[in-house]
Image (tube, rainbow, N blue to C red; front, side):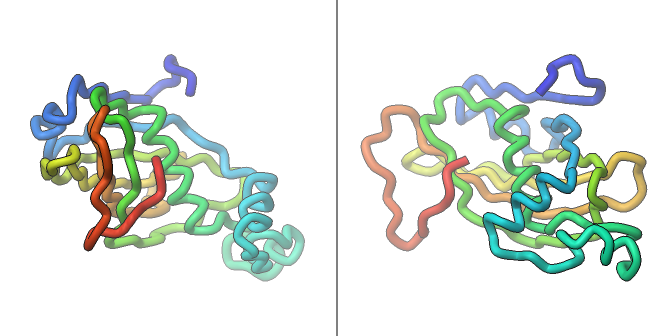
Length: 177
């Protein structure tokens, strides 16, 4: 991320406990990311989702209501979650894992070549023995305004540095952020 990019807002928390003071606020805005056809094709390759609306440029131009291919919804979510690594820093967290998603909505299409970025609000912070859980509200906006591309709640479990083990019973695992 270019730290000088207009509109980027970073958040640096000096400790896990500092997250509690940010509840209810927009804490970060990610950099713009271009969802080009090459990225969309790569996502299709990895996921096996080769639906024509994403990967068949000519057909999407002539048959889709969007005038061209659109990004996969989960590519949009993945890009937004990854942008958190660029703009949200939590000191004292030895590890962060995505615990889940809630209220996922794909509101408007991201046409190939468009740019998106994440706006990140901390909805809730819950301290836990091993660290804590943050419930982030994420809005993925498309360049040019209008409706958001996607909105979702991202639940992240933070494990404090030096914590000896992560109790997963009854809580499931997650993907490392």
